[in-house]
Length: 159
Image (cartoon, rainbow, N blue to C red; front, side, top):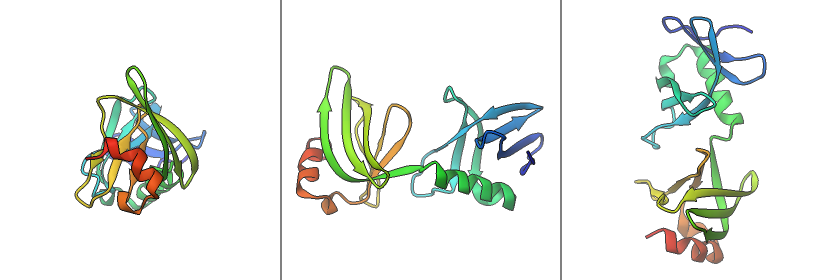
């Protein structure tokens, strides 16, 4: 394993288990990347989080990283399918405290859950983001381009 980024005493690299790894003072932590606001700047404010969802490091801008580390993080983001684009909304069902979405994405059929009080987020460009309980992000680029059934299924949740 070769260290690719050193910031003070931090390293960010692809570990032996092919998982993005953050290392500080000899302590290695496998991490996932979560994009923070603003969504319109996908290369800024990337939070590296451990298996419990705790932030261990914040990348303010990928451009500030050395070339090899930046490429490693970018490749990780591509393979992690950072944002899944919703192509069809097959079904949305509300239960006691959860909303269950059944959707079709470019990666296939997905079923995910949100809290009832968590609503889709509208972005300035007209797209919609939905974050599930696991922290995965689903995006609808343009509701008007969805098929009529998807629009009908989604309509109670987007105003």
